[in-house]
Every structure is written in structure tokens, then in C-alpha cells.
Length: 195
Image (tube, rainbow, N blue to C red):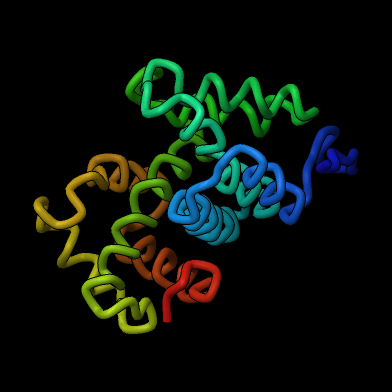
């Protein structure tokens, strides 16, 4: 059982550890859990760089794909089911809303900082991990320059949307974002099964 706790900044908030437990109640695949952790790390780092609420953004990143296995890839349901799960767990719209809207296939592009950051983090995290896999699983050997080079190669990690990543330019320069993302994943490499 996970706890939703009231706090000064968040009337309905969940601590990081409880968010991971809630995710694990709904997600079985270790690779998807790792993806959510990676997205969360990038979200935290982005929030810190933009002077936003890093704890909130990290929890959103952890929970963004909570429904992915349940909906079986149905992009017309993905995000909506997740948001409903989060609301039922006692979380507020500040978490559920970005989870719902990160499905840009259904909701289109949104321009709020958290929504832009979530779709960018969802994609850059996969690209950075793919870069690490090319380097024998060593994210420590990945640099912002590596990411910049691989972003240009559309055949590499083709499922990672370069357009979604570029949307972060509304808030920061891409080289800064690449460096921030690499550092974020290097900081949690053990949780991702990387070196």
C-alpha cells in the first residue's frame, strides 16, 4: 500500500519511494520500470535547471507509463488509464494531468513546461540508454557529444522522437539538455543496470 501525503507545496503528493512502489503494482517488465526511472531522473534534472519543483516532476516521470502494460500499446487509452489510476490512488491533477497529456498521439502538443519536459524526457532517456548499449552498457562513456551525433542519425533508436526532444528548446538549449540528460542517467546507472 502506498501513501499519498499532504504537504505544504502539494495537497496530494507522493514520495519518490511510494511512487516506485505504485509503479511496480502496475508494471512487471523490468525494462519499462527502468525506462520510467530514467525518465524521472531526466525530469528531476530538468526541473532543477528550470527552477521548477524537482520532487513533483520526478514523481510524474516515475508514473508516466504506469498504464502501458495494462493498455497493451493502445495509444487511444494510454495516458487516460494512467491518469485515472493516479487519481484513484489519491494523487491530484498536478500529477495525473501531465501523465494523461504525455500521449501526444491523442492530445497533440501542449506547451506547458512540465508537459514539454515530460515528452522530451520520455524520448531522450531512451536515446541516451541506446547510446550506452552501443558502448557495452556503459552510460559512463556517453557524452553530450555522443547524443548530439546520434540524434542526427534517425535510424539509431528510431522510436525516440527527435521532434519531441527538440521541443525542450523552448526552455533551454539542446547541448545543455543533452549534457543534463546524460548526467542524470549516469547518476542512477546502477538502477538502470548500466555501468
